[in-house]
Image (cartoon, rainbow, N blue to C red; front, side, top):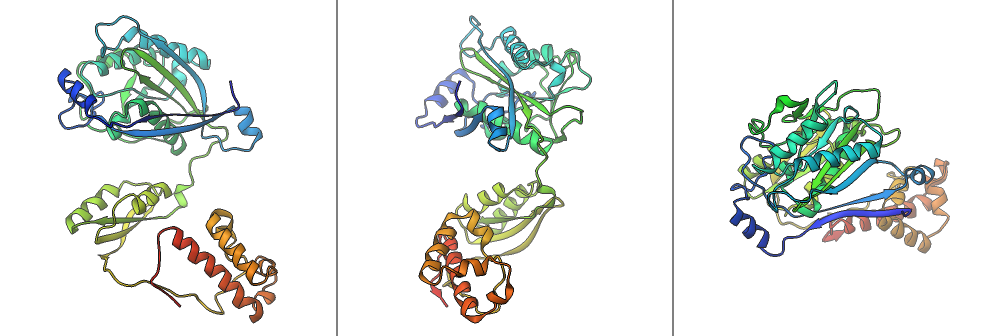
Length: 397
């Protein structure tokens, strides 16, 4: 219908109304956790969130050279009509929306590996959804369908819950790992799990090997009976992430040694993700107790620990001898603040310096008349980059 679209969902709970209403109905989990498809399920745990996706026609994405994270292979939406209450799902309608989405995708149930369920952790809704999945995806397949719900990790983000499931599924296909569903020590006894080949993922598992693209389906069901089901397929030529050869620093802060140890234990299962590293460094208040971890494919190891002191900070610009051909080129391409500072400095000095720094003649760069202004220009740009990241010195030498 259009060449490019931004689609997503947002939930901000600016009033306690949702908590109050569901508390009156007895639908809130006392501990605030969604125990999706668990025998211990006792209600939802609300959460806020925002998720956004960029959608483009596959042919346009290929022509434009854009990276395709996943393809929307098929989708369907329906309404369950009459049921026995506002919060009561309709199993046959859920089966119909699944079959409609499969038909839209031109697939059979056995062509889908994983379902990211709506799975809110309620005693009424989860068993109805599980039975609908067993009756559709659980039939006529060589290996069990893997079932999970990101609400066990994030809580129920309501209007953002569907896009959260899509994002989880895209990342799971990319990394080739199906994440576990938390708080599900025992699958719900209200579900006849023998009625089909569906397996609740309670530990991380490798994505099943096959001679076809990885596929995941995502369900999102609205209050009062609107059902949506989307089937996703791994992007064309998609390779797993290059995290196997990556090492990422994780910065950890806490108020006490005990809290620092607890935070480090939380990060032990982390993949070497630059996104996790960025959030760890910028998403928490900087407390006095600090540690630095290194995350790699081999695991997470602690490399430094200490107590931060309030003391002056100094930057030192290095002198002749630190120069190298191509210095600053990758930073120039990646960080606009670095590029702007370097351009401004070179304009004030000698615009020819750019060709010397990024040229192929080391002899020119090693001539003092070029070496010293070139180093100064790059170091000014480095200073501005560090400044933009919140590192501001008291002294510069």
